[in-house]
Length: 55
Length: 229
Length: 232
Image (cartoon, rainbow over all chains, first blue to last red; front, side, top):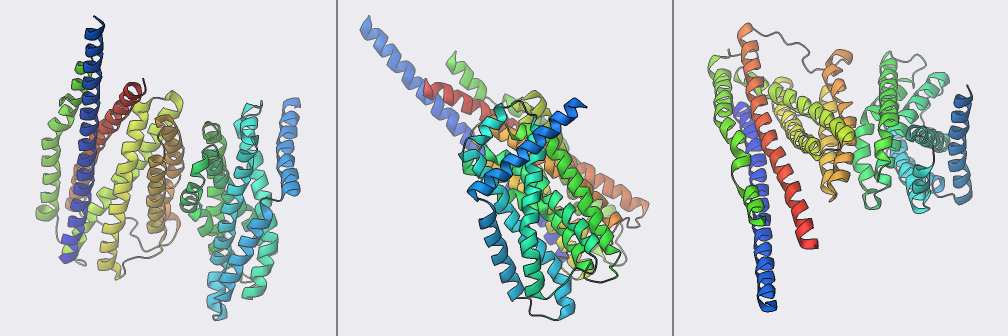
């Protein structure tokens, strides 16, 4: 019985570990997108500021 | 017929190029021989066991040493091509990738054979084992095992050749893929220690033949993609 | 326009198919597990430990199928040079690796119950170990490339070489004399539960593969955008 529980726990644990890792990857991707959006906002603000001064 | 003779001429020329380069520069065989002999020495030192047990393990040990040295051989062969700009030049020549693959395979096969001509007698002497009861069968095992190893080594070496930082990955990829060849060679060689070898010998030879053929075919088909940068 | 593009990336839309299928797949897998424990008969020789076979075989077949699928996706990439094919190839390689490792572990536990040994250098076990090592090498190699097309090309070649091991695993017990069961005798109920287990686990791994593939494609898109934005 112990071996049965261990085997199913290993499979369950292995799948969950992989899913958890993929979840971490998802969070990393979201952070990269947020970083990209922030960079774009800063760049757009700088361009608007330059255009305003030129005018 | 003329295209076949042209192909043969190109094929022989490519092998000749590698042999002449090696004879002049001696970048591959000396180092490989040194590694092979060191491995054989190391393994034979620990074979101070009963004859039966020694005969049982010696086949596998010899091929393990041979293939480790062979991995270095393949890596240095492609490193030499890459460093001198030869690899890039070959990609630009009007030669099919399959021809380049087969020529490199033949060169690696011959180099491995040269290596084993030295380390096999060394091992037989130091470990006090003999497989010469069946020289013809041993020759068949050696040819197929070297063909199998050279096939997979050449495709992986070519794939990693263009990527200079990744040559260390060759060992990581090569060893698992060479295990079926090593298993077949080890089993067949071990069986040949008897004057009347076990039928297991034929099973080992069949496994060798299967993987040698599969790897050579896969290599000829995939080398075109392996050569890209 | 730019804001619209990024909000498309971060929107929940790409997860819809995966989110929709999560519950049905969970129910399918749950049913399979229930059948294993409630319906499958208790085996005479090994008792309850024999139920490990249902998950071991299911995971093994999923692993072999994943390796084959990654090879097919690799061929598709080499022919069409589309990174969408490589997304499938990488996702299937990862799942194939996971399934191979789980197969080895569950098989080892089963072997200890059946043969009183954790491991034996038996043809099928050895060839499965080789496949796990090749998948590990493939993933390690993929991780060392930044250029997605180089990564895809190398991954495709290694995946195609890994396929050569699959027939050896399948035919090992028939060609070589080993102790791994070839065709164990099973009752109709056992066979039905086994099929249900294979279907349940296949659905689970397919769902995870699809999720992971979308992530890989998303990662490629983000990398493209970063290269354009940060380098201009």
